Amino acid sequence: MPTTQDTLGSVVKTKRQTEKLTIEELAERLDISVRYLCRIENKGQKPSYDVLFKIIRELSIEPDLIFYPEKDLKGSEIEDIIRMLYNCDEDLLVVIKATVKALIDVAERNDVV
Image 1 (cartoon, rainbow, N blue to C red):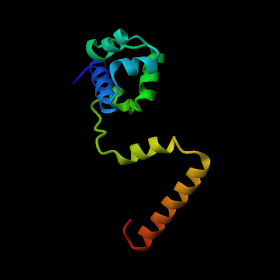
Image 2: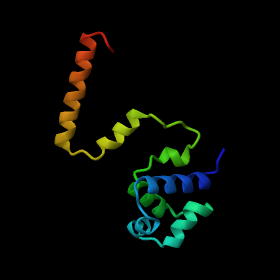
Image 3: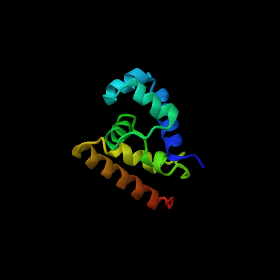
């Protein structure tokens, strides 16, 4: 099993590359040095809590990827939806709730659920 440090570095690097960010761009967004970010990504350096928090937020990383690497999160649609909900305002949440309720009602009527 990979260590937390190995997992953190690989998760950060992979997510940064997926987001098409250079290491310099991400370091600037995190307000840390490029060298520090390189050590996190490649050398297994543990970031401070504040930096870890910024990394997770800036790259929208599911914390379980770092803290529970053995947990299979691939295809976790529910967790993806929950993360998206945090970006919605109250009006959008009302619409989303009504839509989900209507979909469940239709599915129950059609004996799908």
